Length: 397
Image (cartoon, rainbow, N blue to C red; front, top):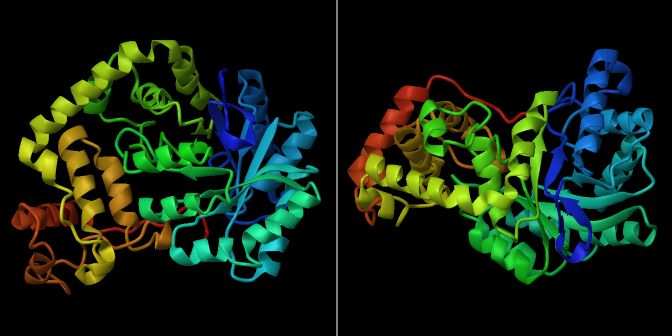
């Protein structure tokens, strides 16, 4: 395993971190008595392998169902506590509830100290205010720091880049967990700003949210050859020295393999990644057309200002991924989550188009776009493909 300095925390963090979102029994908050021997044994085998491979940072959250309680028992049973433990607690306008949630997580994890405590899901201005206001979440965490119950304070986010930049610029956080990978580089400037403030940078779910790379399309496999798309995406992320660690969501023991392959090839990143990036870019222009490739996301209305709250930027991105990389499974899952993802994945899909929302209404907010009619056609195509079902976030909140 290789390690990087995790920003101002000065912690030596492995470039791969064990994400605790995929190996738990349930997304419900169950007592440990509800966990079978087989289910717990599976988790403890994963912990043992993580220890063997050098993934000395384990990340979980209150929202991850039985993850915390199972990890706590796993640490006890294996007698192997990771060097760095991180959990995440949602912001709350009531500081007493937030304080209680932190203490509950410490109790579940069966540790004396949480090394990294993130405020989970600063996705809106309200969440940020709850965190940074006088007497808010950060003040509660400062008190826990004085008691040596937690180490460093960070935040995780699925929010807009402008909101993340605002949170970083408060200079109240030591690290940030955010989304950034090959198919979604919106937060490139955010990562640069985090480096300016010397924040640790943790990449959330690069394999799943990076395009369902555990089940890649044939086209993605071909374009990333000779690397597997997971290996390519890991190397792409780690090529950025301002990125310090990637979350590896492990549901079974074999899920480590391709990520470890990426670590073994890190010294050869410049041999592989630029060639694959160029190949992917060329195919993008070929599949989408140069004008669309260069301009598709300009002058698009935000979902808040679109009739029916239709999230046109996200929907066009999904359409492009289908046309370019045949990512239909990923696009289907994300399309069906729109309208059901709350602040984690805001806005709505195109199901209301031609029902409650007319083409004319959308054309009015698309007046500045290079091809409004093409936008409408793409929305209709997505609706025809995916409009029959809905999806929900796995997390209960």
